[in-house]
Picture 1: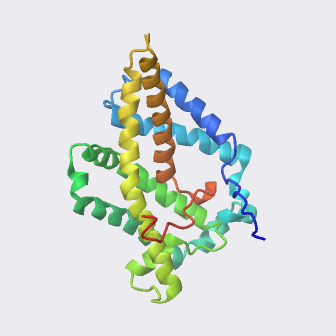
Picture 2: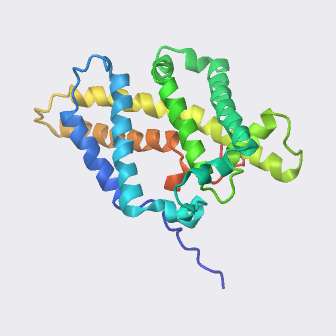
Picture 3: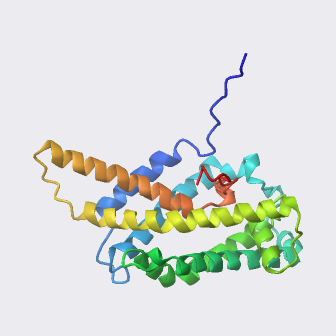
Length: 261
């Protein structure tokens, strides 16, 4: 008799979705579009996704406390003293920083060598990233520094990639497997993140300028379909961008098979 497989339990709290959905609805109708430094729909899209992420992140950290889940691999029982951070401020942390910077560089290289990313549509994503690059990099390095102090095993995928770049990684099956996982994860992000962000920003502009005086079935159908896709790509864009361990949203493993790709 075969054993029936059970559906795995989601690591995402139930209320994260509804809270995020309500946030997006409020932003759709009340987000100001006359801010001088948000002069186009792509910068506005970046700001909206940032607010969307922050609201859900606060709920998961303060209320749901997802960082307590075993899969996060974190131990916040160490407290929050200066000694906690000084003990982990070592060569391993330097290797991880090299891995983070190398990841940014490798993703930029992937986009540079692929002709599709130099087109008129994808270049808008690159402009937004360059506009806010130092903020993104500062947040990423600060997050890695803090989270590294509380990881049970600080040698994560960024450490293995950094060790590879510095020429100090072991050429064995385990290390090669970790390196392969990280490279495949980068490829997934490079392919999907720009696409989801641009779809989100384009749909944001469409919905803000939509004529809501609808008198036909087709009009309602178009509006509802566009709204569903807008929510879908918002979830996708934040999901691909914010694979953070503290929310148990880090990539556990990418699909290794050719069929999966």
